[in-house]
Amino acid sequence: MVFVGYGIVAPDYGWDDYKDVDLHGKTLLMLIGDPLIPDPNDPSKLDDKMFKGKAMTHYGR
Image 1 (cartoon, rainbow, N blue to C red):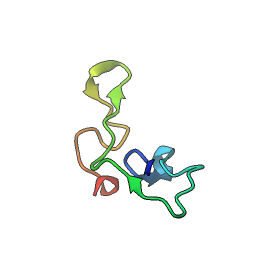
Image 2 (image 1 turned 90 degrees about the vertical axis):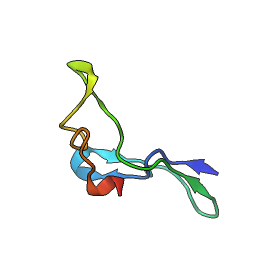
Image 3 (image 1 turned 120 degrees about the vertical axis):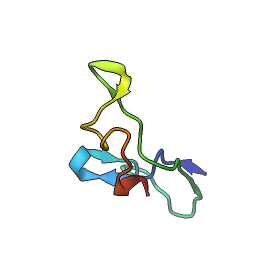
Image 4 (image 1 turned 30 degrees about the horizontal axis):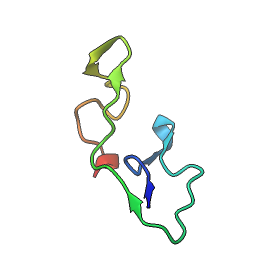
């Protein structure tokens, strides 16, 4: 079994959960939704520049 985070490949965000992961013949486990990235200026809020903050993107579907 291989954990792949959210299972997202999003070149526009510089994100690839499958980079350097060999899934051949394995079962993968992934989270659902978009990654919750804290705002670097205020960690109590989400970073709107990464996966649109609280809004669901097509990556999370």
